[in-house]
Image (cartoon, rainbow, N blue to C red; front, side):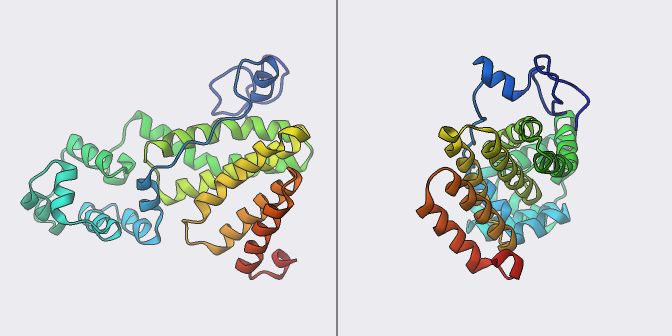
Length: 266
């Protein structure tokens, strides 16, 4: 966990936190929202979540990415040229590799128009470096938060997950997400929801269920049945705790249909 401490209660605060007071104390004092609100994910996020898109992005090759964008989005070269603000013949040369862009400003422009992180096209800056560092440590943050929750320190888990989710949500709402980022966001949403389900009073457990539900929305688009089944299982459990048995059974039944592991089926 992070070395910094809440000025009010002394609990460990996430490395991603922007406030010197932890989320729980902020909530108790009425100076902050009870939970960060899930941001709506724009359509471009789902576009880049597909396996084909992930393969194209991994090449870091602009012609490959442009061709993949058109195939997945079902758009014409003319429409892509209009989106980028270029002539159709110029886009054609980019797609075939007859024209190579080395200018940083142009690559940043293309990344922005296609809703891609700039580093995918070889452009790095301070903000992008910070974002990549967040992704690098984000998985550890989720795992450590889960360990804390299972050890009876659910408040610490919430305080660690809250700012991570907030930053990922902000990034996603702008359409700048890769598949790995979406997986991390879904994992963080599940962990935050389950931790909130441990911390919140009974009358507010629906908030926890909403977070696990937001994770399900992402998992449904990732073509990963194991992860999808896991999020459905977690969401079903939080719905049960929140007093929605009918909806809980529906989610758990869906998870059962997707699961191949006997332990998960049990």
